[in-house]
Image 1 (cartoon, rainbow, N blue to C red):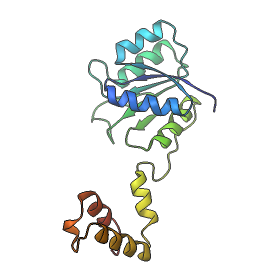
Image 2: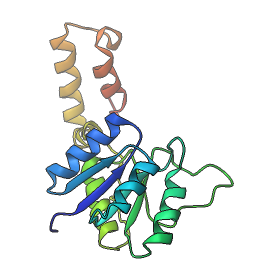
Image 3: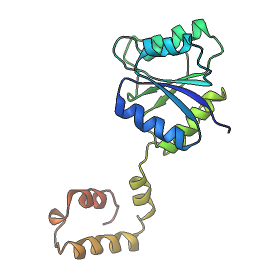
Length: 179
């Protein structure tokens, strides 16, 4: 896909920075906006955006309200909502655009953003929320690998019991079947 001009609207500076960096790394151009009013001002100034990516929960104007206002002014604008929630609050009208959960791996988020910009349905991998560590643990869960990982961790930390291992390693071992 060719590069996209994306307006990223999120009130959280860290989230805005991380998502913008990942999208730019994928070859897209990102213009950040701190909230709904800032986004509307950029749109009034004529920003040539292919997609508006907006956080759902922001102070002042919610992402759903921003989406409705933008689509009333520019019905052909492609938009997607980002949310950290698995469900919208009860009684709230769903936004009139696709929803992308913030907990997905960045590679999956980029695919979803590109699909939203193309007007295609969002199709995330069945394990889209799995971290790289989760995927690595899944690959290592054969019995010989589990035994090897377990003994290597115990030898490295000169630990006879799991309680003596650092928490991060204990949590990895806890997720391995047949350890």
